Image 1 (cartoon, one colour):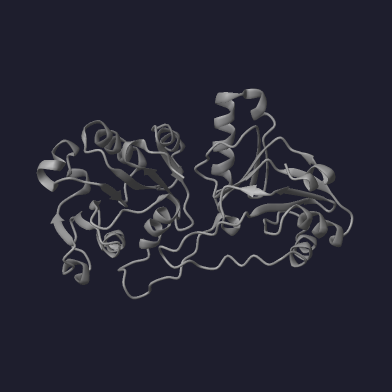
Image 2 (cartoon, helix red, strand yellow; image 1 turned 45 degrees about the horizontal axis):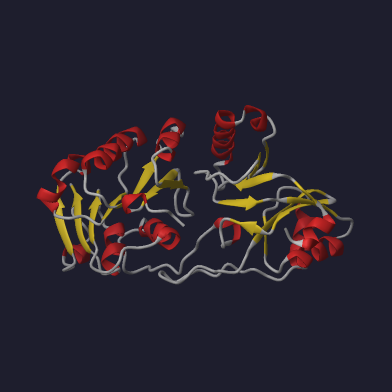
Length: 329
């Protein structure tokens, strides 16, 4: 731990998770449920303030967290100048999540080096510099963690958008997933189920992949003419994982952005993992009405996979599994 942290404060002994706006209840429920299953006594020490949820113990991946603050500390201070000086003594780059004393927090943030969070060009390497998270718990208490799980302010990934190529903005979800977890190589054989109008197919074709797109409705005209894209009329759920090689050939990547109940997707994904080709997979869970937390926990339990809320997800989560259950970054 940084010497400045040890000299100026005391450890909270846990992890703070940051919820996407509007999904605070989902994150708190997920954190409490996970801890109650592991350590009921620790679960009693969970607390939530606005978008932040504190949990005792080490970091655990949470689907509804867009960032996590690792080993946060409590730092007492008196003046704005003193608060800013305490943070700068620890490291340069900080991102504020304001939950209390908003004006005072903003004045401290103004005294810190600016962190702009510039939008990325797709394919650009994410920032490598450490980015800490901090907030004011009250007028004279900073909560800060110099290390977080995301290099982006608030954990939000933003891109320089292509407003002319893709047929819809859904392409941003796949861009973000590939930025975070790795993208297919040119020439990869990809199967896009429920592809219309083709936002995800467009991303794959831009990467130089050979894409088979399946949907009842056709793709955007430009994609229908793209030599890297083969369109098949049909239902995503009509694809039988046991017959994929016979009907579609080898598959390196499977992508899925279909509007359906998460339980139905879970059943289909399990069938693919049992009988389909070994490949990397990216699937969107789309919630209709109440959040189906039973399905959230079921997807989280699939070995070698990760369930996350992307910046470009709405009332959705994205499930990612690399071929063979390879470790995810």
